[in-house]
Image 1 (cartoon, rainbow, N blue to C red):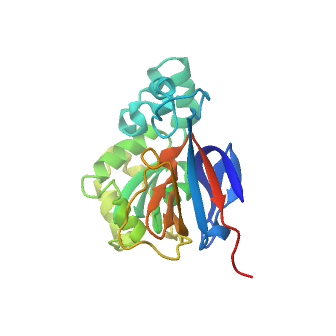
Image 2 (spheres, helix red, strand yellow):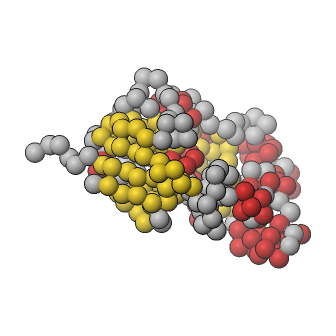
Length: 269
């Protein structure tokens, strides 16, 4: 079975195990049934912006052309430094983005990826945010009414907690666990005094199970820009990574690329 189109990040359904869907031209295709079978992936040599559709020689910020990467409010510095959000003071587009994406409830959380880390996300992105990270556990520790406040809490907590993931350890499942409820108490103590009123103390730990049969002994990330086509046996999916017998590939990195997927039909009788 062959499928092709403009790639976006995989869609998910939070079941046990998590159900993944390939997104091509914004249409979903189930991936879990193909785990265990061979898959051929071929970049067709075309990249188009996921926002405006124009052709581009290089993808920026996971799928945008240079102009959209530079000008769209969602790609401003505060996308990675939310404590610096200034959309409220920006142009008309920035202010509209602030009203719809910044001036809404955000969660601060702890998650277990390669280790325990702190992060933030909009209130409607749980558990999808954790799944995108490849987290096996998640715990909400605060709910705030505006993005900039969640960023300020994250910065304070990150002084004692990691805010990055070692993606190789995450894929191998080599995570350094901890008592999440005790860690929540420790994190709450790090909140800025004027933001401690937003702490959550009664949330339960959520656990996530991924469809992974095996991972390669050595984790090597495939680069489609250098080798535009490969075939390998799909052995699992975690985060936004497809896991194969001899390599892994981060599909989110190639958002905007036009790619052909050739799935082996089930060889079993």
